[in-house]
Amino acid sequence: MEFGVTMFPTDYSIGPADLAVAVEERGFDALFIPDHTHIPASRDSAFRTADELPPDYSHNLDMFLCLAAAAAVTKKIRLGTGICLVVERDPIVTAKEIASLDHMSGGRVDFGVGGGWNREEMENHGGDWTRRWKLMRERIEAMKAIWTQDVASYQGEFVNFKNIWSWPKPIQKPHPPIFVGGDGPRTLDRVLRYGDSWMPMLAEKGEPRIDHYCARIAELERMATEAGRDPIPVTAFAPPRDPGVIDRLRKAGVTRCIFGVKAAPAEDVLPRLDRLARLAAELAD
Image 1 (cartoon, rainbow, N blue to C red):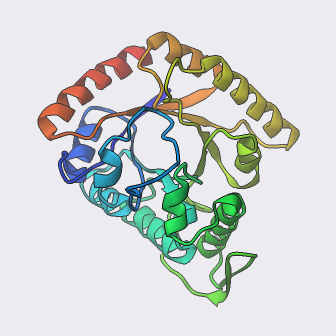
Image 2: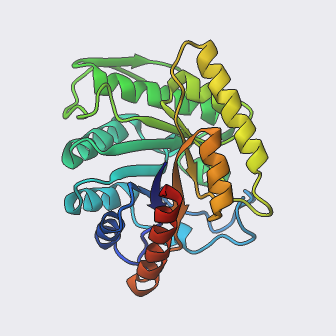
């Protein structure tokens, strides 16, 4: 099993370049950066993992700029969007950003995608919350066309363009792997339709539902077999730091765990990374 880290670089935390160096030096396999363009000051959308929304979510630096900084100072770690809110982003621009990042990093991008949880945030971008899943599918399909076609076209309900040029193409072929986030009723269908991996968020209020996620992984494996696909890798996002839980996830089919770290200055973050590195080393034995 592989292990990585996710953190919101913010205007008060360790910077993304220093964070990336620290993650790579400690032997982790990946760094994932979350994505929020903003947080509405007034909202009805409930935050799933805590009673109060941490300041990380509204003080975060731009995800793509952070990943570009990380790419410039590292050689080995995978660089992930965790997750990219494609329902809030133009697909032509996003395809260019992902392809450029993959080119700059030597083919190290993991493209995590999702529909998000914050209705008001999406609506501020002009989106229809009730139709976000079709919008997300069309934007991902359109990006795949841009990455794989010299002269790309796409026609859908929400996304339409004809005969465009866009380089660079990603180094990874046919494109960076797409990690579909979420755990809704149709999530596994989305993984099968346009994803390469499943990346559920395990952090939540109360006891983690490990039995539920193990059952869902088994369901995904069955669906992949029925579709004639190889087993689909699973990345567990923000799992409990419990060796027993991690071992259960490994046996269920999880191939990588991404541990969450709270945004803070370097003097707070680096000791946390040291502790996580020791845990990862123990779990790898």
